[in-house]
Amino acid sequence: MKRHLIFPLILALVLLIGSSFSSSSSATPVFKDCYCEASDGSCSASVSCGGGCVAHCLPMGDCEANCSGFYQFFGLETTIQLQNGTNGQLVSELARISGKQISYSPTRPNELVNADYKKAVFWDVLEVLADRGTVQIAGRNFEKYRRLREVMLSDSRFSTCISNTPVTTYVNDLSGLTGLPLHITSGPPMGVINLKVKNVTLKELLDKVYDETGTRIEGLE
Image (cartoon, rainbow, N blue to C red; front, side):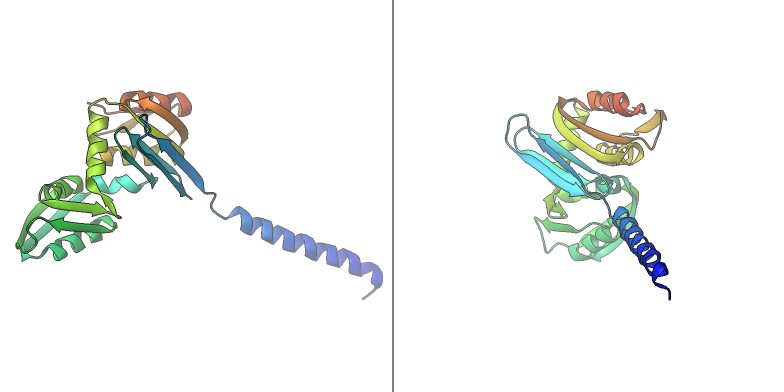
């Protein structure tokens, strides 16, 4: 090969390799952080997720954070029928339906389980179990989520951080968490929420989502 052709060939190879690395790098998920702190300073929560995240902080020590989409399973339609079964069998079925790690410590561990749930809301099933023992989801006590629902539905105030989360995903999360029939009535459903607010009610939070994204969410009772 002639010497005057060697340099252009090497340069082309370098550019091709560089382009390959750049393309590979751009495909890597960009992790976003969520952080919030309770208004009384009693707790804080943070998480980093590739597909967006949400953190909630309530006074008196109730703070938690999860990747976006986590709460949707609370609203799943659930059918479980079990006769003279065990708590282990029930928990295994709940974990299969939800795709979550679920544990349950009943106050009467040796009692046989008879469950007959037909198209029940997953949240309602968890509440029945929580009234009879301790339910944990991915290592977190279900009572935290009960407390969060209570605060949101009572117009009490909380702090929250939402990062890199599409409005549709957030609406599905909120619907599962609150049990409300929330839905988008106008604006871009795929608008992305990046919001950090303190001491707001649920209505005020939805108004702030509208201010940022132009997407209107309704369904509050």
